[in-house]
Length: 178
Image (cartoon, one colour):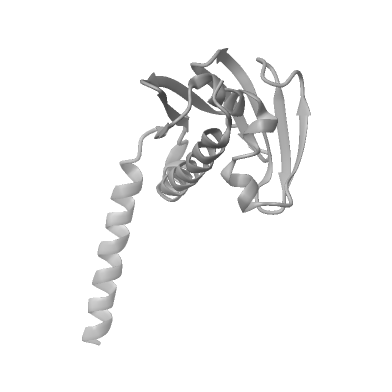
């Protein structure tokens, strides 16, 4: 009987800690990951502004090689859009909202049948002969369920961003300098 009380107390403490962690999550999620690439912004920029080229290094294409993409609009321009449907990545859309050539791209994203809209940015900053690229994510953590999901998805998304940025680095550094 004493063992059950100890186990119950441990489980109770764990639940209280989990509730505290979840309620302390921000109402708006923000994530950013950066890497320095040995290439100029004009070499890197097409791979973040053109959604077809984005898929050459996207971490989600490795995760779901059976994903199918459709594209709308003129590649590399505001309003261009990519839709996907895959067994692991489900469905979603990403579209270009803002472009500042060789400096920044802002995209909107939706997933599945959810109405929630998220934003992602690529920010390129020259550093000598290199470029620091920062990949950001912003979106609402609606209610307790949204905050609980962010506890799991935030670190997972961060790992995926890091993987993608490493692949972008390898791709960009293999390109001839302009």
